[in-house]
Structure formats: C-alpha cells, structure tokens
Amino acid sequence: MTEQGEEYQPDPEFAARVAGIDEAEAEQRAQSLRAGLESYELDAEDLALLDGGESAGDTDEVKGPAPVLAIVGRPNVGKSTMVNRILGRREAVVEDTPGVTRDRVSYRAEWNGRPFTLVDTGGWDSQLKGMGNRITEQAEIAVELADAVVFVVDATTGPTATDEGMVAMLRKTRKPVLLAANKVDDERGELQAAELWSLGLGEPYPVSAMHGRGIADLLDLVMEKLPEVSGVPGEVETGGPRRVALVGRPNVGKSSLLNKLHGSERVIVDNVAGTTRDPVDELIELGGKQWRFVDTAGIRRRAHQASGADFYAALRTQTALEKAEVAIVLMEANEPLSEQDIRIVKNVLDTGKALVLAFNKWDMLDEERRYYLEREIELDLAHVSWAPRVNISARTGRHAEKLVPAMETALESWETRIPTGRLNAFLGELVAAHPHPVRGGKQPRILFGTQASTRPPKFVLFTTGFLDPGYRRFIQRRLRETFGFEGTPIEIAMRIREKRKKR
Image (tube, rainbow, N blue to C red; front, side, top):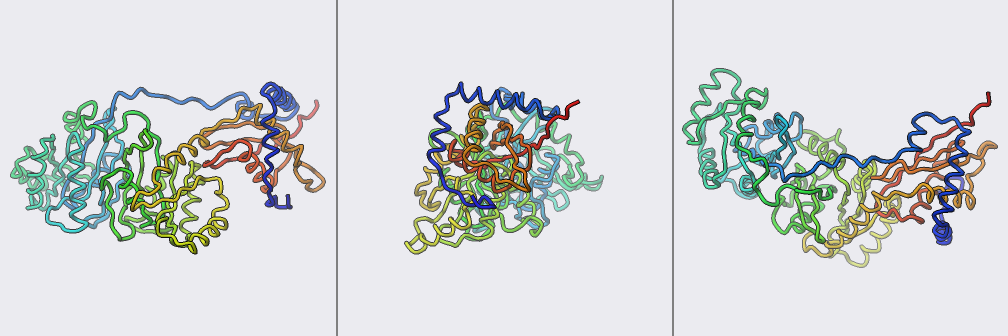
C-alpha cells in the first residue's frame, strides 16, 4: 500500500482465512476485544451502540390498497395548486403556463386519518394534437383507474367548450364526480361559480386552491364518495414492493424503458429532452414479483441552476431517490460518459441507496465504441466498480430481464448484516496482515468493530487514533472482497477513544 493507500491487490487467500475461522472462535475473539474496551472512555451512546441492534420497525397490517382520487380539468385551471393544497406541501409542479404537468402523477395523502392516493393529471383537451393529445389520453386513463374524481373548473372564466367535452367523458366512466369551482376568493366569485350548474354535474363547490378557501369542506365530501379500500385492481400496492428509482440525464431512455417493462405506453415518450417532469410511480411485475418503479424527471443540471418547472422537478427527483431502496442509473452506451452521468451516480451514493448501472442502446454499439466505453468506465466509474452492470436496449427490451437479478443482488447486499464476531475476526486478520502506517511516531489501532445499521451497511470502528482515508478505503475493499456487498455503498465511521485515566 502507498502513502495514500490507493495501491490495492486482491488477496483471495485473505477471504479464505477469514472464512476458515469457525463461529465459536470468532465469537470468542469478539468477546475478548469487547472486554478490552472497558479500559477506554466510553459514553452512553457508545454503550448503546455496542449493546443494541437495529430495530425491526413497525409493520402495520395492510388491509388493502388505499382509494384513488383523480384531479382532472383542462389546462391551467389550478389542478396542481389544488394537489399541493391537499398534500400540505409543494409536490406538484406549479407554473403559470398551461401544460406544465404532463403525465399522471400519484401521491400518498391523508384526510381526517383516512389515507388515499391523490392523482394529478395533465390538462385535458380533446382538440389537442401530438403530445397534447397524449397528455389527454393519460388524464382519461387516470379517471378510469380512480375511485372518485374532482373535476376542476376555472370559475372566473365560466364553462368552456372543453369543460363540456370533459363532462361528456366523465359521464361515460360512471365514476363519482365532484365539481370544484376554483379561483373563488369572494362573494362575487361565488356568483360566478353558480354559473357552473349548467354543466349538469350537480352543485359546484366554490374553492380557492391558491388560498385554501373551501378545500377542507371539499375533502369532507370527497371522503363520503371514496370507499375504504380501492375498487381499482392493481393500481396501488397491497403489500410492500421494493421501490426502484429510475434515474439518469434527460432523454437517456428512462420512460422508454419503463414502458417496455410495463408493456404499455404508461409514460409520455418524446424525442424532446426533458419530456418527463414529474416522477411517475408504476407497479410492474418482473421476475415473478412486483416492483414499484419511479420514472423520475431527467436531471438536467444542478438544482440551484435550474428554474421554474425544472427546478421543482429536480428537487422532487431527489425526493424520489431518497424514498427508493435501489436506484437504476441509466446511461447511453453509444455516447461518451458525461459529467452529468457521474454526478447522478454520486447523488445515489450520497443518499446511500443500492445501485445498478444500466447502459442503454447497447444494440447500437460497434467494436470501437465498446472499447472506448470500457476505458471510460474504468476511469470514471472506478469508485463504483462494485455495482452490477446491465447492458440493455430500452427500445427493444433486449436484456431488460437481467435487471431483476441485478436489483435483487444489490438489495440483498444493501440489507446484509455481518455478525459482530465474524466482523472482528475479519478486522483481526486484516490488521495482522496490513497494520496501519505509523504517523508522527504513533500507530492508531482498531480496538473493536460493530455494524451499526444496514440499508446501507454502516460499520463503526473504535480506534485509538484517526485512520487515514486511504486505510479506510482499504478496509472497504477487503470487506467487499470477503463478504460481497455487490451493489451497495459501505460506510465506515470512527470513534476515537482514549484510555480511562486511573484514579
């Protein structure tokens, strides 16, 4: 090992030596080291860490999928503002431009203790062509998959031909519909809202999504319409599917891959970079089990450099990543790796998620590009050489099935716990073969190690001094070599402790 600890040679014999230590001996070593810690200054947090373990967490019994409420209306009537008001936080993209919300997007919501799924949709307009028409189709699908619908109309403009066209569509679905007359801020607005009786959907309920006026009363009525459990099969999870964040720079093929995996045109796909602005959850069956995929908005640039809809989409993409368990980072194999690709990988590492690297458009590679790609991966992605790699084609679906074993491997590693005895046997062998370099006449020692948590695996080492970053990286590599950890980041923390002073 060099001064920086960068030089590293795999040692298969080391892993074999650790594996050859039986459980009884490993446990005995750990108990001896643990006893030695008693002569060091330990605080209450240290003792809790040494004596405790990760809690199993609450496992609430799932009675069934929560009911689904769709928010629909023509473009720019305030649907996303209403969604944010109901959620009590800024989730849906809001901008004073028609068509900012393009896909149907679902959020978990609650009112008076009752959970439900809230679906935001793009503006409905049967006259639109091209992408606008596809947005309309997504809104209609959202209505079909809902248990009840809130139809939002702009009270200040009165009923339009588009509103009347939507009424005809809603009547065909036979779903319970509540008519929300939005942008009503005073008595004059209430008089304008009364004009919406002409739509034939019953009483219009005056609200102001911007200021919150009337929203609580509307939600009370919504709860009367929604069933306890959704009557829509397959749209909302009934168990606990693993959560997968599909991330990558814009136009890299995330939506195409999601549609291919799902087998339907679930997400709008267009050759315009940045088509997807909202994360879209989708339950997909792969490898005999369900996975919850999130097709996140393409990360264009750093969040503080983005503006408007792109800014909030970038923030929400980060939120989706934080809520996921495993991230698939999609990159274009036929293009040189970019700074954005490397930054996105770093985002995944920063959130501590399991990681799979997927190289799209593999069917478009020639031998020369393949050679250069391997060199780029060695140079730019060396720090995640432990991540499973899958070469796919989102367009044809080629090798997409290989994502399943890659995700399963990464998640298994992400949740792996090394017994304390085995971990300290590993540390003992490692230090005996490669002690920490002497620094300033002192040589820090590792007194004891424990795994503080999983998801991702985090190890805490009690030491007599600061361990060089290079030595910590060396420990990480030996951990991977010995125990696997394929597809998961590993964290190593230190607790430097001094000997207890004699009294």
